[in-house]
Length: 345
Image (cartoon, rainbow, N blue to C red; front, side, top):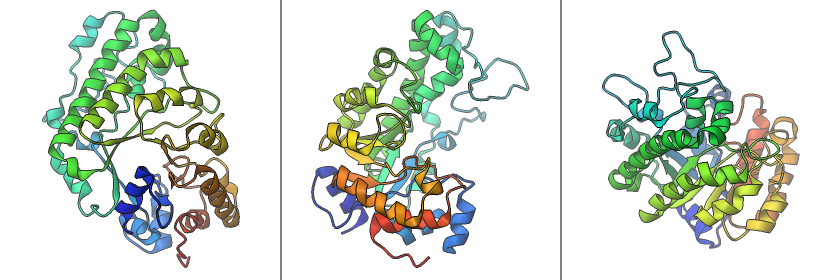
């Protein structure tokens, strides 16, 4: 069974020879040690060695090639020289109280997304199941434009401004996706997009605010993908249990990364509520197990999760960005537990 066929059958609810597996996207600081351990030159060779079924083909910021070198979203536009963006820092719309200033901002144009760059990143990955499309992390982008605290406050004090900024950001995402769906539909198998709206304990905003300021835009992105015959996989870290029913109703086909130690995200809870309704991707705890567990414990946990989630599960870390602190023997154990392959390391 090929890698692509294996994952396609999982999404179709058909039996496979083994569970699906995605190693995730290890942090850049993690990759040197991983490459040394496996004795190879790049992560693609690692993925081949460990029998990874999936690849990620994303039209991200690196593919945006403005002729004047502008970023897709200049969060600090007009704030003066020497400003540096940090998490939660007020962006250029922090003090905005009307939509006029929003309309004057130089919003990005999808024509500057270099599809040749995207095609190059997809080359040679046809045998695998490919996540793709624009990342569409508009929740984060809009939060940066206001500063996160200001963003949440303005949902109450200046909702029209929040919607105006969100509309422009999402329109760009839709336009990039339209190019991907029309010019490179063969490059990927499922539309994969991400917005982290969960903390360790709950969602960052209430379900009511989620329904007004996030969900309608999710629905547009999902509907666009479905209109082009694509499945949809959503990424959100954190405790998002209260809004998963809304996501399922909106039409997602898969949920990632299933942050195992966040409130309400335990495998038993997710399987009880959504088994058979969506494909689960992730769930192998990165907050404690992969850091501090033994290889034996990792094998046991993967077996336990397989029993709970059933066949519609792609084994993957509960956050795709494996950090440098994770011991190599635990990364190997995860790969071996997922595929049944003895890697000899």
